[in-house]
Image 1 (cartoon, helix red, strand yellow):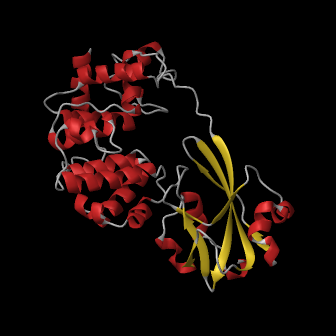
Image 2 (spheres, helix red, strand yellow):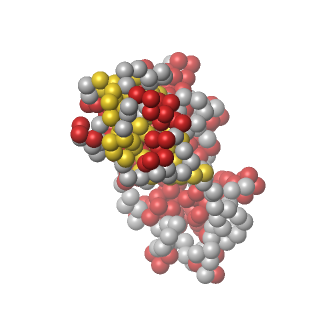
Image 3 (cartoon, one colour):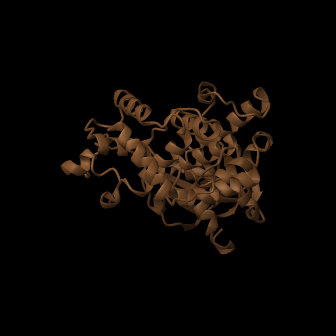
Length: 355
């Protein structure tokens, strides 16, 4: 059954797989690494533009290692999960320094690098160096669950180990890169999460889910994530003519190293009258005659474990100094990396009459 699966997958790949991507067939480990990290964040359609811009701006590991972090974060802006960007920078510096700019070619060495887990290490090892390591992500687990009729709930270490073991038995050891790309493409185009193309599937004869009518039941999903609800008020505060106060986020919270406006986290939507009466407003603006000119509609951003609602408050008058903040020209805001929620607002930032 395993041999039959592999033969049919490779035959499908050679004759029917028409999926095209700019990194497909790439053997440069740096470019493979960049594409894999970006694709952890987004779909291929959106990731393609990010990949092309990133590779153009930072064509080698050395250029990435030497680039200012603010510039790198700006190119990452909108992808989310910025810890991966921080790991990207850390890994680039390690390879540029300890490995003299050459990507390590051993799987275990690749796996030691910041932000690189078994899936990404297997992709780099197989695509760039022809090493026999299978890629196992959610797409591959879905294929294996359906084909072998695996009803165990996804997510546990034991179930992950099971999928890795099966994937290793299916891997074409002589052509691991071709096999790994084929099974990823198969999951993206045929054995899709929703509405899989079972009638076009070369594996359907032996697929337990298809034969038993379990397509919609497999794989068994893990318990849904409960997201923390957060409400963030951002105050657009001017420091002078066309100057706005911003700061870089620090600490262990979300969006570390990205920038933001003056922040007040409330936990709920607040009526405008209560905003002016709040301790936050009185502390920062209330004793200086400030008035609220405009409050934006809500902007939303969903993170893995958090649901963020943001509102933007424009206030009257200038504030000559704000501890912990820096003033920047309004036209320079696009040079700074912001969370997507704020970046989306900057694109439609109201005219001068609103601040």
